[in-house]
Structures are given as C-alpha cells and as structure tokens.
Length: 304
Image 1 (tube, one colour):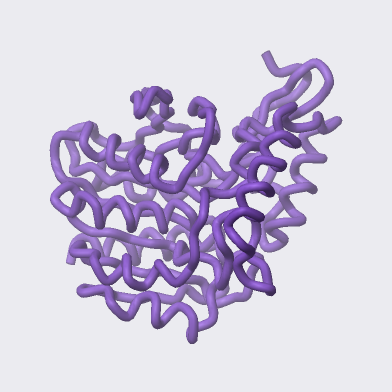
Image 2: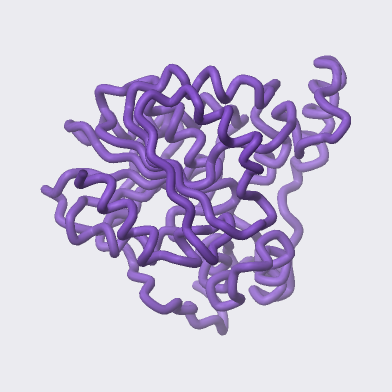
C-alpha cells in the first residue's frame, strides 16, 4: 500500500483494460491490454528502463481497431527479474508473446524495444504482418557493454572483466530516493524534453515505495549491457528482414536520438520494404510528445 501518495494522472492516458502474464524461459512477463480481445493483435515493446505504461496514451489511440498488447520486458515494470540479461533473451520473449496469440500480429517497438522487435520480426516473419520501429536503430557506436565509447570497442577480456565487476557492484540493488519527485528529477536529467507531469506518471508506475523511500522496479543488472556487440551488425541483420518496416524518428536532437542520417541511412539501406517518416517537433520519445500524430501515421501504415 502506497503511503500518502495519490496515483498521478496524465492527460489522455488510459489504464489497461486487462492485465495478464505469460512465462518465457522461466521468467514471468507482465502484459497490459487495451481494445477488443477479438480484434487483430498489435504488440508494443518499450525501451530501456521504461515499461508498458509508457504506451498508456498511444495504446488507447490504437485500440479502436486493434487488440493492443504492451509488454513489460523482463526486469522492467511488473515483469520478473532474471539472473542475467542478453539481447537474444529479450527477442525470445517477444517471440513468445507473438506465438501465444495464435495469429500473426502487428509489431510496434520504441528505442531498444524497436531494435528487438525488428530482430523478432526477422526471426519469425510468419508471425508478424507489419513492423513499426520508433527510433530503435541502435547507438552510433558501442560494443554492448555499457555506453558507447569514443575510443571504440575494448578487447574482449577487458569487456568481460568490466561486465563481471559491474554485476558485483550492482548486486545490492538501487538506492532509495526520498520521494517520487526525486525519481522525476533523476529521469528528467536523462530525458529533458519530457514534462515533469509525464515523468511523474512514468516514475509512479515504474517504481515502488519501500519503508526507506522509493526504488525503481527495473533490475539494475541491466545497466551492464547485453554482451559483446558491435553496431556494424545492425545493417546486415536488417537486410535479412522479410517483414515490411515503417521507420519513425523525431526531428529534434535528443539524448538518445535521432541518429545522424549518415549513420541511419546505411543501416536501413538493406530493408526490402521500407517506409520512413519524421515527426516534427518531437525527440526520441515520439509517441509521448506527439501521440496523436504517431498513432495516425501508424494506423495509416498498418491499414495500407
């Protein structure tokens, strides 16, 4: 029971109509749903450190025509934590959700969720009718262990040592924040374009209140990355995609995007069936800053 805190609201956000769970590789995944259960399914996958409620404005805009299913990725939101995190286990989780639906679905992902949705569509094209990737085209550089480095990838033994050291450092979990407003300010430092009102809503549903303060629900072990990786792999993997893709980005520079065109264009060059759209006056969180325009673009594309 939360003590002395009223659940914050955000304009046009709608609570999920149904909440259920599914098991994937021994981890319980939390699913939120909007819309007619018999309508064509549309699966939403969120970005790093976010959760399914980050779609609480976009999802109801799509739910008039689709059964919208937003997934809390493992270690995020109300899904279970795992012993370790890799990119491919997240992709497997998305595939598990798709297989559970009993019919091909539409797949929409943001940021990390956009990249993983793309890989899921590549693995099981028979389960995905169309794909929408919202600014989920990878970092400009990096090696999969921690943030991108201007010096380029470090030697593999060094990366594994850093990975294990980080796991030991994070084993005690998150520190407590005195109030939810402290969480808001912490997240605002990462996403300065987003309003405090939205960040308060996101933090409330992405944190828990303990006796000594507020802690994020997300597993801190995810901070150490997804294993050895290079952005040079992105373009060739996209070239094997058989599902049509709509690539959406915002027009405004933001903490996590959009990528410069000289990096993004080569990554998308091999996609067989590609449409692109740039939404004006939006940063990385296109679907939060411009939800109605994002929904309209997605709906027009999915119905075309």
